[in-house]
Length: 141
Image 1 (spheres, helix red, strand yellow):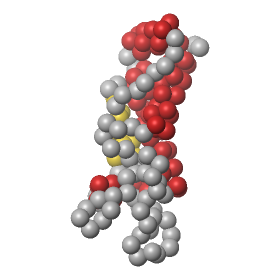
Image 2 (cartoon, rainbow, N blue to C red; image 1 turned 90 degrees about the vertical axis):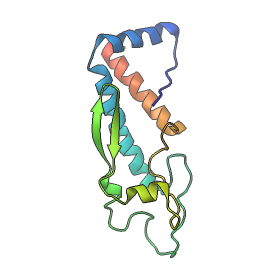
Image 3 (tube, rainbow, N blue to C red; image 1 turned 135 degrees about the horizontal axis):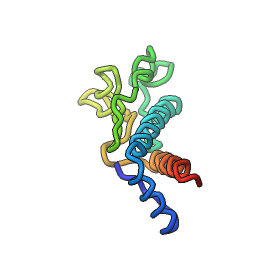
Image 4 (tube, rainbow, N blue to C red; image 1 turned 90 degrees about the horizontal axis):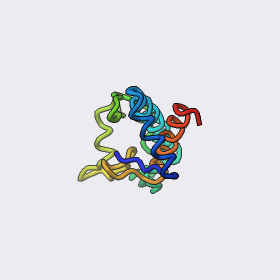
């Protein structure tokens, strides 16, 4: 996953030096990003939309209630399953989540997380803010 950091050259150099000076700092960034990911997935369920802002397809049956939320098991199954200095993993605890994420020949995809390597703007902005906040806290800015 790539993160874009903007700022003056001096500010960016301070951030890079700060990251290099504290071994646990990247793990802290990863942990904060993982928690933010859970929040962003939850927002998608509330808004009934994918990470890119597109509305989820309506139910075939036209039944009432929120899409992908019959019992709440799928919505509530997302959790942080790994955090390290090189990144994080967020997983769903239900086996059928992959069918909703990717779709099948008989089911339209309703993405809950971004496609690999394609982080949407809202998510990227949230991750950028995390990096900036953690580095500012670490550097005392």
